[in-house]
Image (cartoon, rainbow, N blue to C red; front, side, top):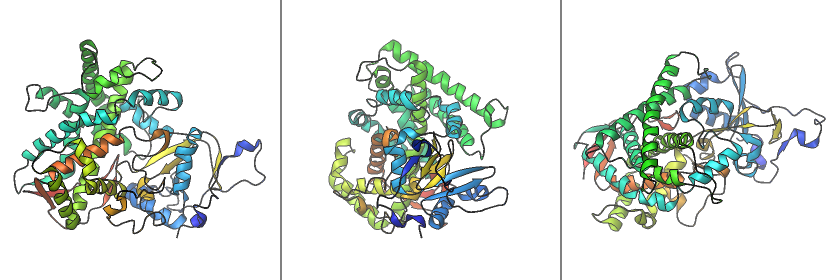
Length: 474
């Protein structure tokens, strides 16, 4: 079934630059196998129609490395966990983010952790580590719980809510409040928060338009999406720089993450980040920190509705630990089933579902030739459904993550691995768990129809067409 994957785990996979030997190999290695597809467009129509399913299908048919023609260019899908780990954790210096990804994201996000490379990436990451330290995340737990309860109060009993949109709005409020310390909308400064949330919603929508493009469009062309990008980025920039200036003038002793970021220096005492660098990291956190958590929460409610026995056990666990009081960060360690549900949701439907890399040199990957500058994809969505790595991989089994059971490295990568491991992974997991622990005792969410739910591969992996659910207060 996996073609050339028959010897996986036996140490036969190698990653070697062809230039390392000082000469070309005597026989030119062949490119990876792959589908022929359309005579002109190759696999582009399949990818545009349903990219998540296409990646699963070609992996099933062709194995650990596949070459996909995308019109005039080729894209390489690496689905073998050992090779992925080799690329992103063991030899990351031989790869970089693809030029397409950097071009697509930099117009919105600037030069933050997602787009930076090399020493600049390492410098920014050292500054960002204190911002996302466990203690800093714990300080935001009350905000997460409070905003979740406010969101529940907005839902009339027996109403139908589009859960993905609701979770996107909730997680955006959380990230705005956590980053900037902006009070929620019914407080005195609520207008400022509403302006920020509206601006970032528009910013995210215009970024998604760019990411959906089949091929990159130069930023200088006066297309509708480029005009929208300039407009939304300009509004967010005005708000972000104003808040940065105000926080610098007031001092950086506040408890919000912006204050921590402004005061962050490296362990060696080196300089902090400039206003432009802080802006870029703030918008990177917005992009990475709210849509991903919103998608994960949406899938969690879908899975719990599909598996009422797990839902009942989880509610009983939360009730036994919390009673009627709000959840805190300290409670999460006493809610093992909740942690398992979060991890299994991230396994089945990883929001950050596809990443890319580009080799800095011609190289051999699993014995196949990959040219310098090629676009290499790897997908947690594909790896997490590999039957070689997971028993019954398409089934929802939270018990896979029972205490003491750890997946082999490379098999579970919802936040990546290596030097680009998501710096906000603790924040995301805590946020998802605290929102669930707050909502489940208070409301039932059930689907309003039996229409099959299919994942859509956008900037995040989310239910195509959204997820409409009926609210029943408990």
